[in-house]
Image (cartoon, rainbow, N blue to C red; front, side):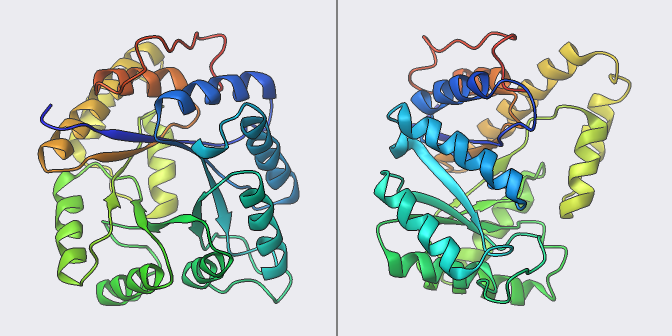
Length: 288
């Protein structure tokens, strides 16, 4: 490997199971990753689970490794601003700013991710990541409009963008080139999704407009009742995609773990991430 690679892990607070198990396994990822990105639920119960997980990591002394999600929808500007200031006081300085899919409920929400990013920038003290879509956002009016919106998010104070998951490396490289041509020179971090099941992958892809290439369907076809082979192929596929990205100059990867932390750790180890040698998560401890 020609240069060092950084990795971030995205997790979501589980709806059931042991919160302590989740917190311990995520804390393990935090020791080896550049950050752990904790998704933020749209509903009251989802937000409560997210804040519980974030507070647990803070209590473990890992506030500096948290990248907390914030969505513009479903909360008022004042609620979001107060939450951001609370996180800042706890030592959290990374935020992933997203529009979110929940319908407006107060009439005083931030209208979009760019406005949310601007609001967080006014509070100050945050490294703000935003979302981008190499294959195009399903609701975007045009490629030009989408690029303009991404530029507005960077102009509002974003320091980097994390892509929607993809499997076609050429789509990412083309998008990165388009960003540079548009005057965007901040990092465009590729997001990779290890496959838990082919059915689940197609469900996720349909929800966000991502493409599932034919070679991937062929690779995982007929393995619905063979989860261990799926795990093995999933890790190998993600490592292969990572290696190709690294060869193209990528030095930072965002892993959508789906809470499959053993797989995430195996991928990090294969990529030579420092600290993975002593990090162990058993199947019983996994936060899945």
